[in-house]
Image (tube, rainbow, N blue to C red):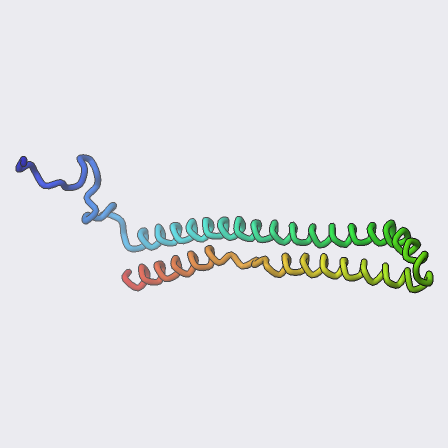
Length: 148
């Protein structure tokens, strides 16, 4: 075992126990703090924009699925309803055949609409990570101001 020197700050690295700029006045330090907080808030706002964009994208996909379900239901009703109703009309009276087919397509459309609604309700536009970060930053700034 060598009895070498105890490891300290790396050569050329600033000593963390010494002030970075001891000649700055309190006014300059507060101005610097204000600038730093402003930069931090700007960064947090950018993070919030990214989070909100992700949630809006999820909502758009849900809305697209809901719209697609509605269009598919409409097309299916138009084309298949007539064929199915006329096929049933060979077994039961015409009005009853058309009623049965209409009820089947109404049930399908309702299922698609409920699934799309569920997707839309599952989105959360609140940027939770950004809110938590801003709260931590606020607490840190308040702590720093109370020390100064």
